[in-house]
Image 1: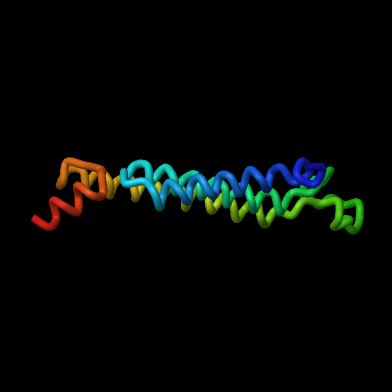
Image 2: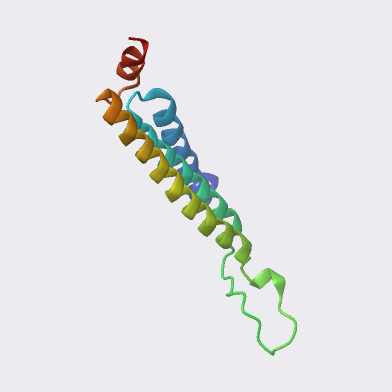
Length: 121
């Protein structure tokens, strides 16, 4: 139980990713699939931010005080990459919702089964 509390953020990551994966695979509604994709991406971003975090870390800005101690400085690479991932995630979600809107205009439904039935006709 002690180990579970110490790694609580990783438990939340797994829960978020499983909810997002379930929504993408099990739901038939295209909007719900897009929401599931956004939840999954949020879990991935939280995972990478958790990996890059250090307790009591300082901001990685160098001053004229000499050589910095690497163990006491936060790595900015994960934060920069996750900012990029957020931008890509928003663009992906926007594209998915735009496609869902286009499909809705053609088939008057967000349900996959209805769309496939209409396409066979």
